Structure formats: C-alpha cells, structure tokens
Length: 47
Image (cartoon, rainbow, N blue to C red; front, top):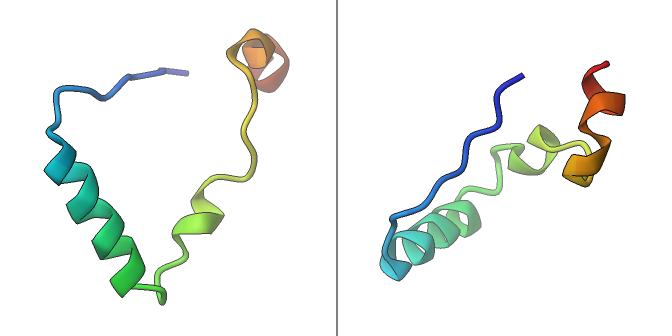
C-alpha cells in the first residue's frame, strides 16, 4: 500500500474542486471512500 500526501495547491484550487463536486452530483464521489480510519490502524487494514 502506498500513502501519498498532496500539498502545494493554492486555496483557489480547493475552491474550484469543491465547485466541481457541487456541480456534478451524478458522480458517486462519496462512494470512493468507504470510511476514515486513523493511520495507527494501517496494519489492521492491510494486514
């Protein structure tokens, strides 16, 4: 498993992304993340 961070974006990029998500409710973006888990549980998740 690879965990990658994303940074170095300007606030306007986040605003553009949120507007895109709001304009496109037909895409199931919410289903791409099943649940949030703390990184301390990573061995339980992938092990």
